[in-house]
Amino acid sequence: MELSRNWASWAQPLDLALQRVTHLLAHVVQVQRATIWRVDGAALVCVDLYDAAQDSHTRGTVLLREDFPGYFSALDYGRVVDAADAPTDPGTRDLADAYLEPLGIGAMLDSTLRMAGSTWGVICIEHVGPSRDWRDDERRFAVSVADLVAQMIVLDEACSQKERLAELVAMQKSILDAAKYAIVSTDLDGKIRTLNRAAEGMLGYGAGGLIGRCTPALFHDPTELIRRAEELSSILGWPMSPDFELLTADPACLGQDGAEWTYVRKDGTRLRVRLSVTPTTGHDGQHNGYLCVATETSAPKRAQASLRDSEARYQALFENAGDAIFLMRDGRFIDCNPATLRMFGCAGADIIGVTPNVFSPLAIRRSDWG
Image (cartoon, rainbow, N blue to C red; front, side, top):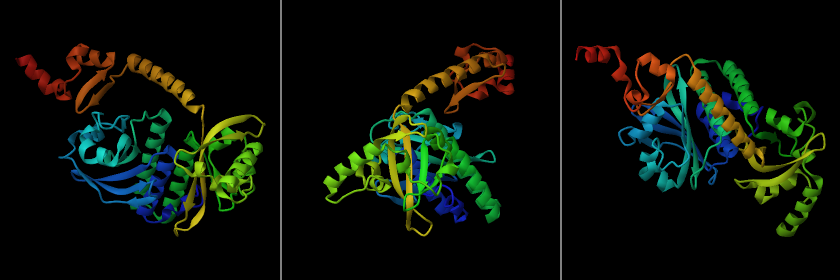
């Protein structure tokens, strides 16, 4: 996918733009399935499903609220449904028999599409395989993409093509720059077309010095490229050059899990990354380049530390806030801060597990009369 000029082609019909979103989701988060659903009364209708294993897009599946009330309730009351073990998670387990198990889905990460105070639909990142703990940056990325899709829908319905193009390009750039993955797109010859802020930070190069001038081979360990070219030449039976062509021909790089490589920063320092290279197509369906997504192999440890720090800051804010803050699931209180207890004049045991209507003015007056 071209992450600059071709993102501008989102001025195309909305269904083609959504296909680009699901393709990006699947390859960046490295899952087999990514879907976008639209609310239609008491149902969810799939408007696009991208299957990375088949490299195909389909649509049309319908989920009814009456068949999956727990899942619909989770979407009603939460912005994100983080189901590391989807068949047992309270928010997704009623999908198990009819949807999760037949498709082999072990984990789901959903983010609702909110517009004008209502839910238009939901994006779903679906991991085929065993359970999977979603990282904090993956959750943030899902919400950012959901916000992008919501903007796309609003613009598709209300804006001119020129205004829609400007808004989408600006939103796309901000989302890619916020991603923790180093994302680089190239043309068919390997010349760099775009790179996001994470790639600039990881490599130490500015975009202006690379775009249209270099291939990603510039920041690969040349010794490693030569060694891998010799190995791949022996496997394939014809000579491979130690350049960008090697990355596009290496089965390990083209796989969903990617392969480990050594990047050499501008200052000469080195880091190990897991690199995935995906062929991309233009609006005409023709192969037009490659999408290279790299993640530092040491990043998960740093992400865990960052998540722990974020949770600690949240807990401190939660406990010390002067305003009432409470959490709900399935229409019932599951947690609250001290300010909430002071506002309602009750103990924690009186509020956890009950519904908000218990504390409505009418309910309180009836209690007083009793």
